[in-house]
Length: 85
Image (cartoon, rainbow, N blue to C red; front, side):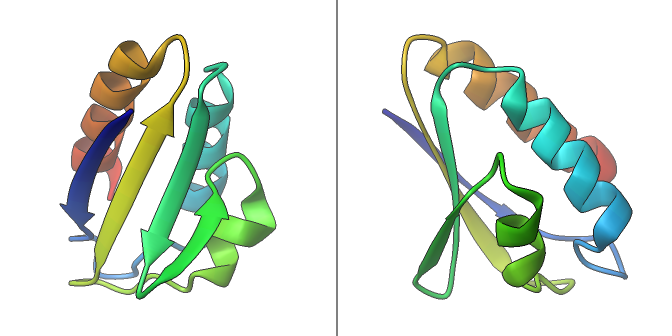
């Protein structure tokens, strides 16, 4: 299992467009990808779950990845977050 934390820097937080892009990026992997904010955990492969977290600028997410391609998924998703959110 891989896990990392990320503090959202985008002034608009995770709104519809970046949430959709993140779901698309997470869905490329066979590993289970979860997002946790303030004790609430959702699948990173479900748009309504990601949107339901209502992540704002400055809030911390914990990303947990478990599965056969977790190393690749962790690296790519962390890079995605740094470049887009």
